[in-house]
Length: 101
Image (cartoon, rainbow, N blue to C red; front, side, top):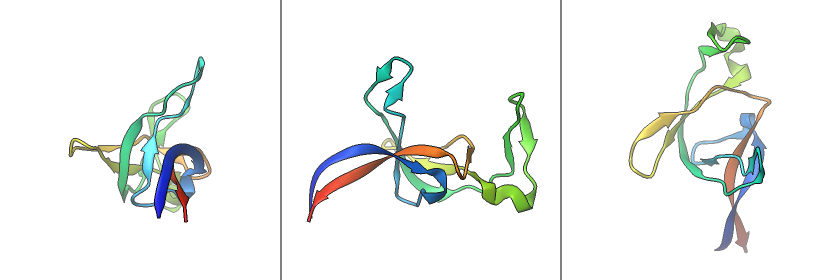
């Protein structure tokens, strides 16, 4: 398999898997911009709080946790960060390899 390029792609947060490479949005307030690598997903984090309408944390009932996504991401420098909480039906950006079989 030969990788020709890696490009950003928008995917449903519910489809993000371990190993996916999360990136910042390539669409900025002033138009297109280079996407920046955040890191590779290393773990799914169970969501117990989400931002409320006023920005303050709101407890998520256990039966509603499946409606939200949050990930632990491994960075190049060896550190780990956790992402913000995203609705499972929301969108995130990942890097996808374009391959020539």
